[in-house]
Image 1: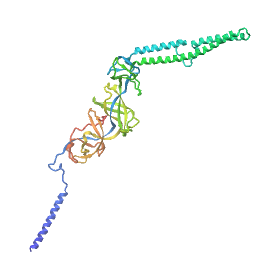
Image 2 (image 1 turned 45 degrees about the vertical axis):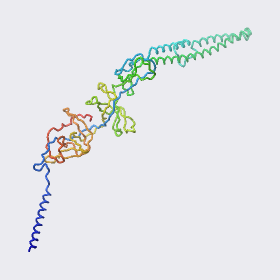
Image 3 (image 1 turned 60 degrees about the vertical axis):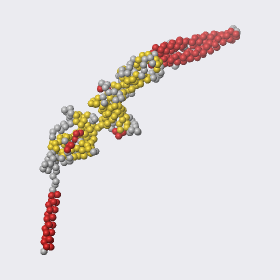
Image 4 (image 1 turned 180 degrees about the vertical axis):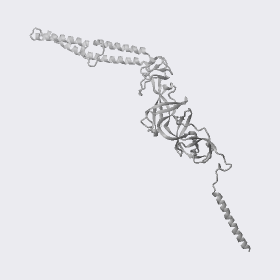
Amino acid sequence: MNLMRFGNLSRTGGAACVLAAALLLAACNKATPTASTKPGGPPPINVTLAPARAMELQRSVRITGSLAGLETATISNRVAGRITKVYVDRGDRVTPGQILLDIEPDRYRLAVDESQAALQQTLARLGLKDVPGEDFDVNQTAPVKKAKSEYDLARDKMDRATPLNQTHTLNDFEYMDIVSTFKAAESTLENSRDEARALLAQARQGRVQVDLRQKDYSDSVINAPDGTTPDKITVDSYAITDRKISPGEYIREGSPLFTLVADRVLKLQARVPERYLGDVKIGATVDFHVEAYPDENFTGKVSIIDPSVDQASRTFMIEALVDNAHYDNRLRPGSFVPGQVLTKKDPNRVMVPLDAVTSFVGVTKLFKLNPAANPPRVQSIDITTGQQQALTDAAGNVVQWIEIAQGDVSAQDQVVVSGMTKLVDGSAVTIGKGAPKSPETATAKAAN
């Protein structure tokens, strides 16, 4: 009897357990509501949106370099002597060919006069006014003409005496005197020709000495360079950056005197990584900044690309010409310049405002609006960013945009640009105002 009652209770309890398990399973299979849909859950987050845009992107290669003068010259002297006068000082500007200093020009002028006098003495002995050319006939010189006249006279006398001697009208002793006179005249003629040749050589050497003395005299006055350059750019002035001498000082040949820099046009010299060798072209624009004017952008044009790559650094050198006169000569040689070389333009690159991108522990992402969600929700998108570009809108506001190199973002997608600090994937949002203005009419600037 008791056993039968226990069996009935067992069957009743088992059924109750099965029913309870079924109810629990049904409850588990129901979708758990999100925090934003649960009654009393967190409210939607207020965000600001901006559309992603397809833009033309100016590609560039970042560089760091320095400015140098178009030409930098250390002026030195060819002649030795005492400095008699210095006309310029450090910081002065000089024009091509302007006199910088004198090195005893009076002494060198006297040396020119002395050599010219010696030359005129030699020419006087030859009966000439100027030094003749190499094809000059020595028979035209005065000593030879005189000797030739005496020779002709002695020969005529011998020619008349010969038949007289043969007919014994003229005795042998007298005839021998006439023959001896002729031979002496003949020898004198040859000697005069040799002497004339020697005097001609001496005159030519004297002419060289005069030229050398005139060169010394000319070089005793130190001038600025003539303004020509291998770049075929005419230099209209130089800045004196250093003066190394003083008046009264004795200097030897080759002493450094001044350092001059042609700074109306400057050279920006920088090294570029080898991988960009195919991107950088002659004539490409270079944008750069200097610390003295951090808010101002300067430009130049690539003029030289080094044909070789440095094996140690795997970089190649470029030079860009910068019109410093356009900037009122405010740029200075030696200045450090960060900048970029503009290479090519890529059309239809997806760009978003820089404010839309967040990075944390190596993960870069943005939030875009899910157009199918109601109420509005956002999706978290992992992205890889590319190059930045600064754009100025019609109102004059500068907005930084950044390229989306990888990631599920298309043009016209609405991305969050403010209020994303509390967002997670799937967060409900309310859309506020204040999105960045469209850059469709903007003008591209170099990225910083």
